[in-house]
Length: 521
Image (cartoon, rainbow, N blue to C red):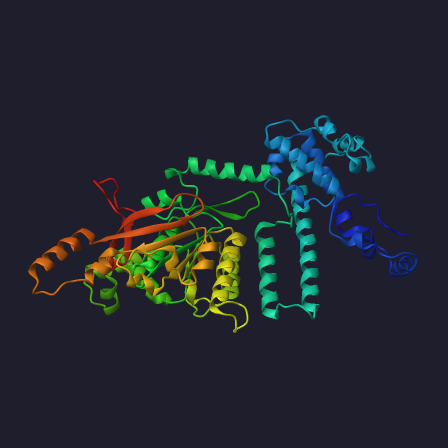
């Protein structure tokens, strides 16, 4: 045998047999293979020495934990004992307590697993073999990288098994979509499958969210829509939420979604975290899937909204030099914001999910908008009925929101039964295939403009009294809209008043007694 004496973390990573292949003569390699078989466990990427070194450094100086906690978590360790030791250290430090060998001794005094590898003396061994604290981050990065490699091996095995399974119900495209989603999740978060998490960790995340809301202007726990009263009602747009924005044609669903998309993209700011990954600090990158309107039409709407020049005039080119200058300035500003439009028609929910993951991986993604839900198709067989297909779509959108940890704002069309009632205000039951949409959504909102319906009730010109009354009612309703929150998991339902400029397809804050200015929208 001619194994080299190497004492670096990489020795355990490649395994003794792998190093043997690199450093020994071929004749010796052949002889060795005849004497022994390679243990599959030796080929699993891991470094026990790196894990020992990092744990020892943290036990000696708890400040090291704060430098590496953004890089590794307990689930990234390979050795089960190290997983438990790191988890205990993290719990103590995050609760403001000391985490050293003496404190951990009480926790592990009866631990049979620790006894098997030396008992309490093992903690002393970790301390004795600790490296210089300045090297801790390099060890943490190595542990993190090896965990990713192990997860890649696991995913590769699952993909291979699924592709080889003749009884699998998933076709090739479905398997590719699933594999892409799993690989994206691994690339984006570096997370190893962990199953259950302790409630203390879930509680900590909740407290962090509340703290962020408390420190943020306006007290929002979610992403600002740019509309103050809507923010107040919703608390902003929350990550992993499926938000349905529904309405009849001409109510302004697309206009409101476009207004929100522009505001969020315009407010986008980011900075790099400890791992060098770009993280959003304000606003966000927006992916807009427009299944009904073309990208050009959406761009024209944005130009009209931001320039103040009506979209019909822009389309006809019937504008003055001053208006042209305003449109040009608006275009220069809009082209700089991170708003990405995909106007491919007839997308399946699987294709949309794949494109969203790809966008997040390439440039980032903080909000997905789908216009509109009923124009998507399911990924199943064509003979599925429409209710089942919509159920698959809404479940897919909710799963996408959770996987990418972003809000998904999906527009939806309402059924015609709204038009048949005297009170035209929409209700949850008006949603087409409402069962699955209402069930899977975290928030359901309706856009309603009474002015639209009142305008179509204009009496005969010969009835002067009726015309006068109708005009008074029109004056009251003119330029006003409502967003009716019909369902909300995070808070109360209610109605939010907004302003609406039809010629610019622009929603804004509705000012009462100069409470608000309309500088944002």
